[in-house]
Image (cartoon, rainbow, N blue to C red; front, side, top):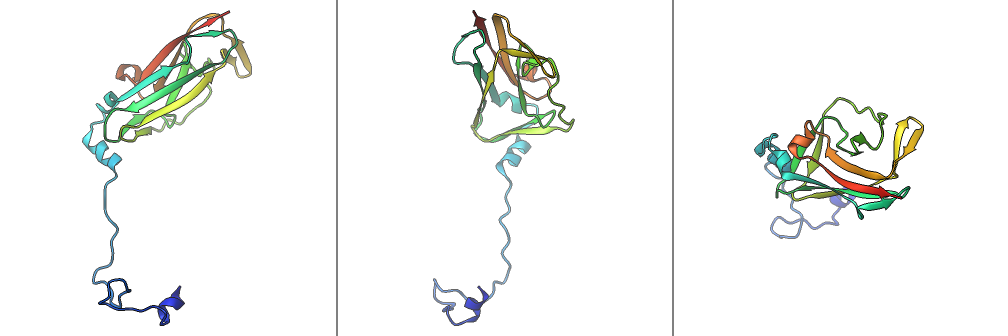
Length: 179
């Protein structure tokens, strides 16, 4: 590249609009300084009210499933504001799903996330959709699973914040297992 500039291959002229110039700039170029919109909205929206603008919904294709049939469900989260929002979480694990209160249908702890806080970011008007499946099994030990009996079960999801239920950052749907 240096050879091109040192040779006479380029026509340089300060007066011609499309030709490179000879002179140096008086001030060096500086990068454009801007504040990311997510940072700006975090400064303008108090952390105590951000949760009001995020909605959560859990849905299944059918309300009833046969015994042993996998139950697919969708968790939809939506930012209702035209500005980005971020929610503080208690760990890097941003959200979790549960069946009748058992996280991921397990009475055994599956993960041990660090105690450091995380952040769940939503772009302006963003809708996040997560697809999961419950196989009608409950984990009772590290390598032991029990099938779910026929009956009604609540499949829920929550953003991993302190007091997610009180803040409206959780939702659930009921499904019925029949023979």
